Image (cartoon, rainbow, N blue to C red; front, side, top):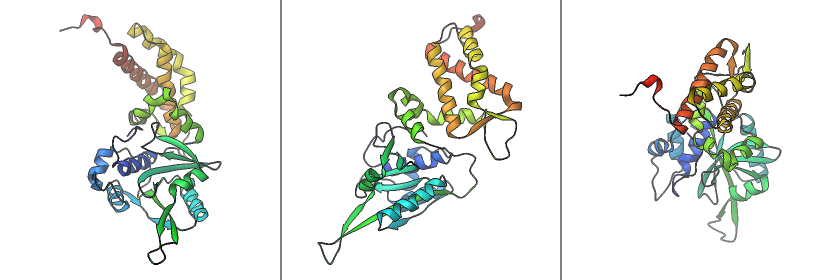
Amino acid sequence: MSFYPQPNLWTCGPFALKHALATLGIFANEKDVSKLAGTNWWHGTDEIQLAKAAHRYDCTLKVFRRFNAEQARRELKKYLKRGIPCLLCVHEWQHWVTVVKEERGKFIILDSRDRAVLTILTWRQLRRQWVYHEQDEVDRRAVQTFYDFHPVEPKFRLRTRAKFSIARANYLRRPLNRTLSRHWEQYVNDLLELCKPRTALSERVFSLGTFLRRHEAMIVDQVDLWHGYIDRTQARRVLRHLHFVADTYGLVVHQEDEKRAIAGITAILTLWAAGRYGVSPVYGAKK
């Protein structure tokens, strides 16, 4: 799973569910979600289809409808405070988005129509997009307003979950960091081989930021030496991205795994350097 815009008009539902699952540490491809949900170009995906797909990932997609905007906002915030992402069908039920966090009156949205995907809305902006208007069948002058929301709750104990914030969303929105957004799942999966989620029982652990303060200079020096040439600024950016993702998911290095982490991060950076700059045969080994 990575953060990139949807390629057409009818796959917003699978993208929204994919984004919700990613915040729960469950990585799915929107094509797989589309297939499970039965998405099609003339109808898109409704909440029943998305609930069916969520079930295949061992999650429940619930359905709530509120007629009062303030009540809807309060209940939405309760789920977000628990770390439960919620799907909303916005623009008069034309487009699915995922709400992942409320902070100081602003909402962090994963919107697959947005070029950066992550976007930040005030409550007033979100309410205007969220509300659905329906004419009364008897009195055509009367209009009923709905606020539907769909929490995505896992049925199992999560290994880790993403902790987004306004600052993190703004960081990912920068054009310079689009590469990180596009390869998000690769960063997470690589880190899960070297780090573990922090728990209440975690002891003798330290953050990846602390790890890099201790070893970043040595790792970059060695990779530069072995490769022959790397752009050290770009190499440090890769390490910063690893740091950012680790902090987002609360991943830490256990003290007994410190040497293994040094070897692992060095190997990742070496492979990045070889892929970016190429590499000559080593020790004359060329067939």
